[in-house]
Length: 381
Image 1 (spheres, helix red, strand yellow):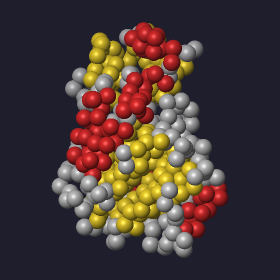
Image 2: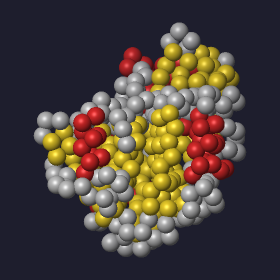
Image 3: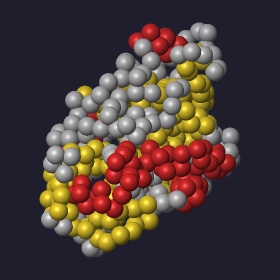
Image 4: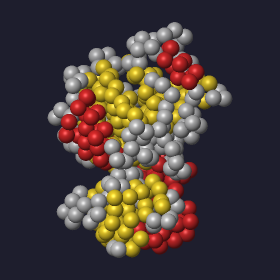
């Protein structure tokens, strides 16, 4: 397995030039960049140099290249597998209402891939219900197939995200990259670092991912009361205060990030389901806790690997974490790089992360996370 990465900017071009001649050994190109994606000429150039590759583009709220994060550049990584293979499945027009059906449809197609070992998901980050999508996808996949990935973003403005596969990116798209082959070794880890505070509240009215009432009161009014001065900066400031959500007293806890508000209706829209009857509490954190969480995620993803195993380390971290850490954001990336050895570390800041709820050493159904650092390691043996 060979991994080569370069950074592209409209003003400076390539940090490392693309090959002068077409390289047909490259099977996968992962590009993470701004929501205002490079033009069609740029995509044509990548296609010309890597004619056999599947080219995935996802917009981020900051792109990761080793321990650096930048909003303007595009990180482009070419992957050549020794024996593994890449099988893309994609759909256009995904939205909140059809997310579950789209997930089931894509999962059924992925299940036909011979030797499927892992699925990387890159999806619309504003206008879909990713939790419902995974509810549709998971039951259709063969036993033992792991799923990781994330939702595209454009940072704390939370207005638009784009995904592309072999063409100019656009909204309303989801791409699944099926990775097949017995030689592939995949590790995963996902850790947050947030703690709950304040009283428990009951969701008394909600539809899909939009919450209208908490304890019979307009949800936005309750939320704003706890945020104080931060309420004037909604919805962006909501990234600093996600919700801890339980479907019932004995149900597992999940974290949900605020994506938008409706001031007239007094409602809030989150990155995933919050059903009526759910128990919720506000959450907060510190930069040090988030950095520790990133280190734990990297340790889990690299567990059992030797120094030469993890050829590619994919980091998908929530934009809410970046909003908290601000100028110290690169410290969480430094922890991942430290634990990744000679591996190439790439990724982006997202509107949501997809991974199993465990450390990945045993198969577990993938779920939607918010406010985590999610690490996926890819290598061949």
